[in-house]
Length: 445
Image (cartoon, rainbow, N blue to C red; front, side):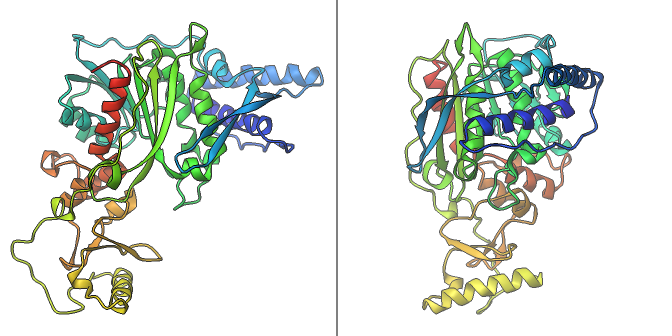
């Protein structure tokens, strides 16, 4: 299935780009990939036959075909807009997913001993922030399934929450057997969209992980679905973001869109209490069958002080300026660079609550709150704390995401792996506020 998804996803996106742009679009040849499974091979053979028949008739059909009917403009949180043009699909990608990828979707796995609790499932689950959020909201919930490639994620999540099912890869056919749930969350990889990396969009295979998720959604139709992504997908890749929304709106039930789809960009330190500068875009899908109100996005709340997540050292070993410094030469140089700027302002850096990102090529610091935790920064041990003259501890890294590290079983994952899970997570208090609003809109609470 993986090979076909990568091939069809890029072809579909190229067709969408051509249809939504006044410029002529020349489709690039996508390199062949090794296919996994007999189903993917048979599908690709079928597609080749279709393309061959089209070429024999002198046509090169595109998955998308545009009609100039104007478009609907949707305001973005930063005051800009994304233009969603009217697109007539000769063979819509949604139908491709239904008819070509898996004409007969596998029967869903049966959940043993079903209850009236809210059933919860997720993809790219990590340590399952959605279940921590359910606990924070005191919901009566049941962990039905999770999905993540990382063995540490599976080990930690299943030990904490005891899922009914766990899937290793959403690009495998087995994921399509995931049963119906009431609440579904997908924190898809950010690397294809992040401003910190190459930001290759759909040219990065990880950018296409939304496709099997949407295929599963079209069959199981959860009552509430929440997607989380870096804000730069909206600001730096607006057409790809519009394409993603369009695919969600292609999910139909009884002839009309099955979901009311809304989105908003929120920052953890403004909307999630925690002192971390983490800006993310949330897309919330509410089933039309169950919607009872509009989605009311979380408003601003006061940020907690750093002392709420940073431990007070019981026996601090503090030295005179420049104090204790990182052992790594690059980190030490970066910390001293930040100290110099603070000294130029006439302030003592050892007296300020500076949280310093010392691992990057261009060091920077925030005062009174932490920079954004990422997978790599968290794995490296977090940030430097100037007033404590030390690096963050693993427990503090977890607290910045709203999780008490004491709950994580140490015999199942190393401290580095736990920090990596933290760096990939959604801040739990922020997610809990989004989830509460979504459940209220869907009439589930």
